[in-house]
Length: 190
Image (cartoon, rainbow, N blue to C red; front, side):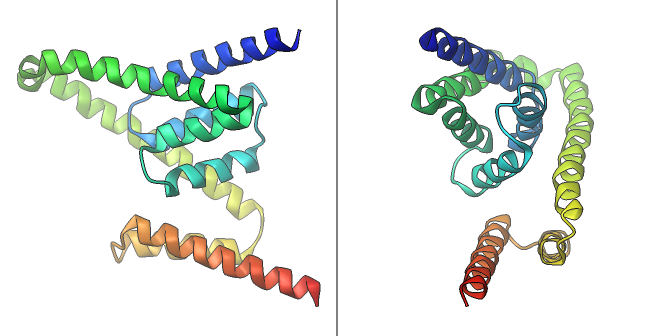
């Protein structure tokens, strides 16, 4: 009975990541939004705070955000088998699409309709990324933590105004978060 339930979970995980990856344009930030909707809101396999943590880990780890998120979500849902299943479901559509495009690259590159289609998709991607910002940023604001709001605002200013590399911002935010956690732990201990 347990094996059949795990098998169904793995099939559902594979089909979900395959679907998300096949119909998501715009990169890892967009995929994280759809993963949240699927695995948090619809399937309830992961809670919202945990998804935020997984998204932060996926973004701060080397490699593609979509694959990193699939690794973390798959591991969380079904261990090693879930991780492998989610990664295969995530990388299969882009591999197939890029293989087809590579054979017909000249035709795609010169086609004005394809260029217009891609421009339209860019607008859609912007909307989805704004949705991610609204959802994740709103969650931080709802916690009513001055510290978290200051870190979020500082990260935004650093990237939008001063053009600081995102990697440096992530590392700095991680360091500040660790220092705060250590400070809070010592404060509670004393």
